[in-house]
Amino acid sequence: MEIGERKLIEIVKRFERKKSGLIRGIGDDCAIVKLNGSLYAFCQDAIIEGVHFSFSFMSPPQVGKKAIYVNLADILSMGAKPLFYQVTLGIPKRITSDVIKGIYRGMGSVAEEFDIYLIGGDTVATGEDFFIDVSMVGKLICKEYKGRNSAKDNDLIGVTGWLGESAYGLKLLKDGIVLGKNYKRFVKRYREPRPPYEIWRELMKNDITNAMMDISDGLIIDLERMMEESGKGAVVYYEKLPIPFQLKKEKLEDYALSGGEDYQFLFTFSRDKLEKIEDLKKKGFEISVIGEVVRGKGVKVIKEGKPFLPVKKGYEHFSQ
Amino acid sequence: MEIGERKLIEIVKRFERKKSGLIRGIGDDCAIVKLNGSLYAFCQDAIIEGVHFSFSFMSPPQVGKKAIYVNLADILSMGAKPLFYQVTLGIPKRITSDVIKGIYRGMGSVAEEFDIYLIGGDTVATGEDFFIDVSMVGKLICKEYKGRNSAKDNDLIGVTGWLGESAYGLKLLKDGIVLGKNYKRFVKRYREPRPPYEIWRELMKNDITNAMMDISDGLIIDLERMMEESGKGAVVYYEKLPIPFQLKKEKLEDYALSGGEDYQFLFTFSRDKLEKIEDLKKKGFEISVIGEVVRGKGVKVIKEGKPFLPVKKGYEHFSQ
Image (cartoon, rainbow over all chains, first blue to last red; front, side, top):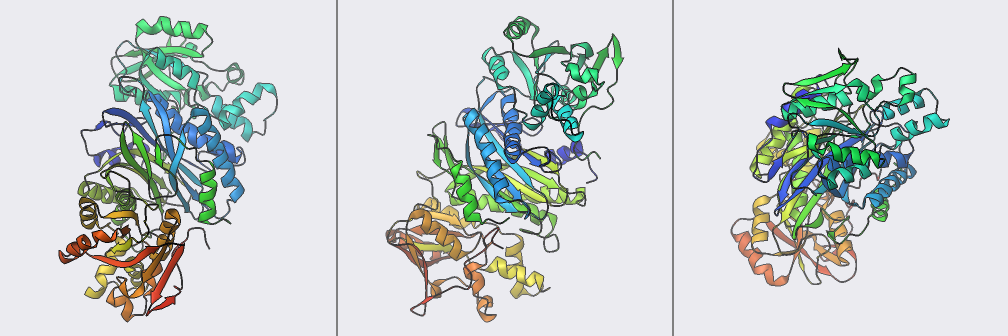
């Protein structure tokens, strides 16, 4: 298609009709709707063979898990507890019933772990493409929804886990390197991008975050989106980024800035919560404070005290 | 794929986990979930180019409308008022942005008519197939949900509108016949299968129906599904079927039994509501009483007092 994702969202937004029950609409990880006095989060995210996964690198259960993980990450990042989901499978002739069973098995295992359940969906025959489109519903567990538009001036910026792991895992698989204990972790992170639920729970319990989103397309591009929705700018300190040693060694630090598919949480928080964050870090939760929210717009990266321009910001659909 | 739709539903059902809030799960037009004390209907239905629509026969806005109509019919048939929806578009390179805009325009016009709103979704690049996957949420407006499993012994069976119109419309388009006032109605019914909302509203207002579903795959196959879910059998009187004169003239009565995509409502109702149905018919609402619910299983068609075997029961996905 000749238009970019941004342009597409603009088209979609033109057909959005504002309604009283709609608390947050298009442009965030989830929509937030008030139903019977309570707030619920709704998302719908698809994965396509050849774009988001390949059976050369992932087993059917892993593909099923990924379809659920990407939606779980969206629900969690709004500050909601996931409840249930629907699945549409688009199935070309070449896909066997064993593959389908494997995919449902993978989805089922994540559903069991996160105590969510499948309520329905659709199965359709396609000509060529295999796709899994999941819609998920969650219930807000905090007073106000988190989301991309709640970053405040002077907030600090945090990120969970490590960056670039998934992209590096994919590179290893493409290069045919899958063995060795130094590599295993990255390959697993690519194959099973489970959102860091345990850290999320601590962040929620202590009501630490203002804005929050999951990193799906790359740190820089996703942080830019968050700042744009919040009407703010951000400064990121390169030296504070959680870049795995392995990536540094191989001079693949770019992956951490623009790799995408990490499904870690990116969030902002008020400085008076910094102590809480330090507490969590001491307890072993992997959180890095990587920068701060400022007036203005865009994302500036500072490396060795000087402005630094990332080679690539992240993955944009339809940008080729 | 080498497995049938029935088999697929069995696989899916194995991974269904029963939860207290889930009032009705997989196997109906919608799932019914209790949220905060109220009942909501959830469905997700996709349409694929080449399977459910073709740009040779439908404009982009008509394709957009159809994607919404098929989900609207599901929500309505559970006895719920549609509230909002999400859309995932799978877009191959050959699709232009004008087509996408047309599709959103079509979806938007139906949304406006039915007072529902778009809250989000996804757009993904595909290799070849173009698909639209819509999930929709509605709120129940009756005490108990309608659905396929509520047919009672001795109920009468009703159907709205005319049968076989959509299939005949498609045939006309394939044969290159689109003009002439005798044909227009069928072509329109194929291109814009708007569910008969006005009749539905009367049925709801008077609390007439027990079981209810929309006819998507063909009268006989869908009635069989309803009877199976209800644990009953059905007898249908051929002479009472609303078969358009045009179809009789062309000896295409089969279309009425197995044509599919009519998106009319099929329902059962207690005999003491027959007077209400007759009232509605007098007021001009197109309803036909076509048979009755009996003990046993399966669907028997009676023609001229004798059992009649339809050539085909309807459309089964993956049955080729």
